[in-house]
Amino acid sequence: MVEVVDMAHSMSDDVRFPEMRREIISAVNALASPEHQQRVWIDREYPHPGYYDDFTLNIHILYDDTDVLENTSSCIGDYLRSQDEVDALTKLAAAIDAMFAALGTELEDLDYMRSPFWGSVVSAAAAAVRVLANEGDQSART
Image 1: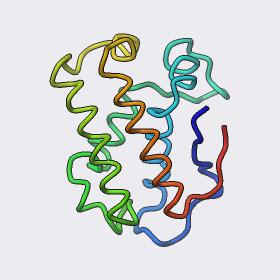
Image 2: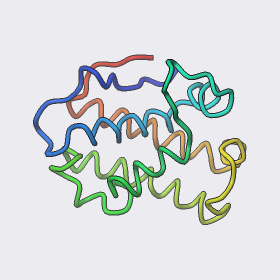
Image 3: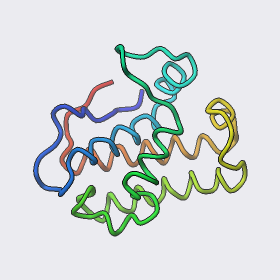
């Protein structure tokens, strides 16, 4: 079971945009959890009314909304706390970029999840979750 970071109890004022950091951590948690991906992205079993999540939403958070996977180093202080976080997210970006380079960006979630690249994405996301948790986001949930 992948350890995910509890968003409700994890933030302090040590980054400029703590709410966006929460969104980044949530997106990385989703990428790290095959159980979540199956339950929410594929089976569409949402934890409460009004909730939505899929692969595309998480990619938009990490690339478009925060730019954290494209200009990772520039995010220290805004969303990230350390070079260790930068390094972990750079590895996640490399895994996602390799998958997109091979498969394109228009597939359905299940097609990405069934690809030979998906294990690398999940592994890199799980490693990033551990680093993000070690950087002060200590509470965990399953």
